[in-house]
Amino acid sequence: MRAGARKRISWIAVVVGVATLAAAHVDTADAQTAADLFDARVVQEVRLFINERDLKELRERYLENVYFPADLHWGGLQVRNVGMRSRGLASRSATKLGLKIDFNHFSTGQRFLGLASLVLDNLVTDPSMVRDSVAMSFFSRLGGPSSRQAFARVYINGVFQGLYAVVEVVDGDFLARTIGERDGYLFERHFVTPFLGSDLGDDPAAYRTVFQPRTHELEADTVLFTPIRNLFREVNQPVDSAWRDRVEHYIDLKQLVTHAAIETFLAEKDGVLGESGMANFYLYRSRSSDQHRLIVWDKDSTFSAIDRSIAQGVAQNILFSRALTFEDLRTLYLDVLERCARLAAADDWLENEIARVTTIVRVAAHEDGTKPYTNDAFDAAVDFVKLFARQRSSFVLQEIARERQVR
Image (cartoon, rainbow, N blue to C red):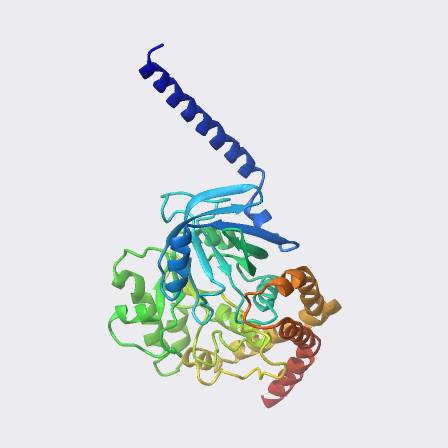
């Protein structure tokens, strides 16, 4: 046999071998799903492999959104050549990297368990490490669409990085799963400066500094932002008999009030009624409508204080304070708060949920040597959120009773 023929046969054998491995990979992947990845009953294990020079540069440039190629391994599955970058705002850390994983950044169309991307939340801003997860479970319990989450031990190049939350990204896949459509306009509240619902003027592009498009990114600013500009233009008009109809054309006011009430019960200090203005949510509107709705995101500032007032942040928010001048919306706000309080207290659901989650993560949390707080601080934070769960409902119900006596 000629040498050239042997080379061709060897090359064919390699291709066949790769194809066989690829088929085996697909078969294995079919046996596991995104629901398995987001199984919050166990601490998952996620392993990332990245060139050491790239890892060094990633840590040096952790304040930038620079992607580096990496491989991800989970549960016997692996996906190669994913995009990996630092993420977060106050949570960015060179020591314990917060990470965004884009499966298709370097390999167009690549997915993992049907997902285009994942967030690996480093949990550095919450010493209890469970606030976001429990809050998302509570939103789900109240019927709102929320990201799935699980916990994981994360390793980079074989080195334990600590306990992380594996978080479902709010994107087209999330929209399809939760509300049954994926082709609308999705915006993330982009925190550059505080925003309380003011009118930013005639140019729709002015709202790009407030809301960052996450779908249809290449469409013109007039298409993307004109309905948002019109929303806040109408919000800032005098509140008269036509105000509500004009505003409700651009936002679902009942859904807004319900969302804010859930956050308020959870004592969220960095949400829609946040201390620094509106924060930590997505806006979504269908292609066939101008009306927006809110989607919850990033609840690690919940459980801030047992006695946080149910009126906290209302007066400063132009949109919300004007909405509550309508008696039925004010009643809805109080009704949802009461429902939250009673659901949280029923059979000690909230306290039991916190206990369940903290039991799952405690060992990994204590072994996490990169977290910016001590194990004693973790234990104390866990004790506080449990105390919150025991006492918050009673406090909120008392405040509701007083508010209802006012009118």
